[in-house]
Image 1 (cartoon, rainbow, N blue to C red):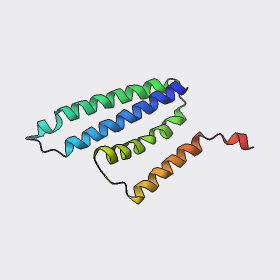
Image 2: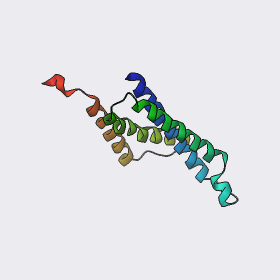
Image 3: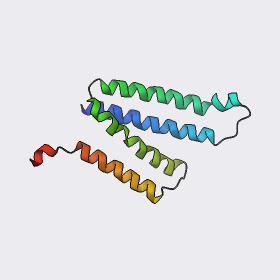
Image 4: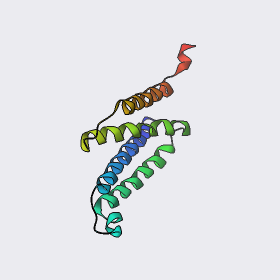
Length: 117
């Protein structure tokens, strides 16, 4: 099961990378509509999205369905961190609070409460 979790998280991470590539592409001026959608950044980003989907399918082969949305929520953290480091975007207090809520939710979901009772 650990392998499936790692595959899912890898897919989530590369999906975040592809979102950053799409954002970089959208910030550039393109000579026409075709060049806007058929440029290296966009093509690579959608190829990575496809690979991320394959990772998810492979992970779900052994992973309980209930874990998917929780692990997928980590993508918000990846996107925020990549945006901060690569795009030099600031993380506001609201974003930071939201990220902390996500981390707390992942922690609560992964904690086995049956050991307390």
